[in-house]
Image (cartoon, rainbow, N blue to C red; front, side, top):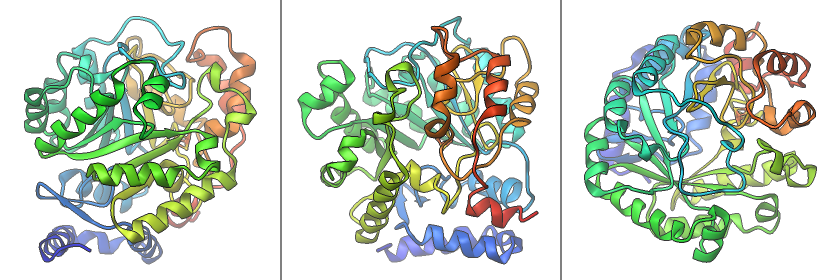
Length: 397
Ligand code: SF4
């Protein structure tokens, strides 16, 4: 249960955004029901539902209300940027495999981030490769974080207490450390890196001591879900004292994953949705499963429209898990590429890549992401469902 101090903070943040009451009553009711599924956590003066949304008392949350909730804005809200392609670990399911090219300079990354924010982005994920290997990560965070939530996805490799403190001072608040299994040997094997487990546990401590909101990102195989091992993993994470379990299933994003037997069904997804709701009611740890947020009951899939990915080589795609490119920021302005991508994107009730990876597999010629014209053709042929509940309520026409 939130403490009195937490409740005061929540009320204060609502009082400072009274304009939210101008939203459609059905949308407000939806948001109240959705947020009511989570315990609000207070961390270092920030009031957090979960780390896919900005803290309730942050400027980024105000931008969510003013730029996306009240008007039916057409720009993106969330984006991920690859800060480097380097990574010492070698996960079999990494969405970055088969990508290559010339990496963006720090100056290009800063222009990209400014452009994303101008288009509407209020939540920005730093990914890679291992983003901590970008030596300018503190400077980049500083430029990004004033009115935008910044979340770091990391293995923890090369983290020091000094770097964590510098990142916190620069405005980083959400961090997610990769940890797929409670057994050291199994995690190290899935990461193809001896010491991955110990590195991750050390990073969790360092980030927590720096005053960050700390989550663990875990990639679940279909077997983990079907063998009911997810709850054991979440129990383990609760015991570590992390704030949030950020869960996603293995996605068919690269050739190794393009097999039907690896891809989850809607039943598997609903198993995790129910588990999340129960564990959040119990309240030991926040559970935030991507397929819950992006399920048809909530916000659905908005890749290429509300979600944008710019990889370390400047290729612009719909989402980290979708290996399509609609252009490169080193050749064209991001806004031009985004408009082109959005013209073939549709808000839908289920994960684009889980549904359409076969189209990508059929056109694959050895490198990813697939080039612009092929990407456009695939997006035009792809199967989409109707918009998810939030977007049906928000844009009823
Ligand atoms: S393609 Fe899947 S992972 Fe990507 S934004 Fe859509 S639902 Fe999320």
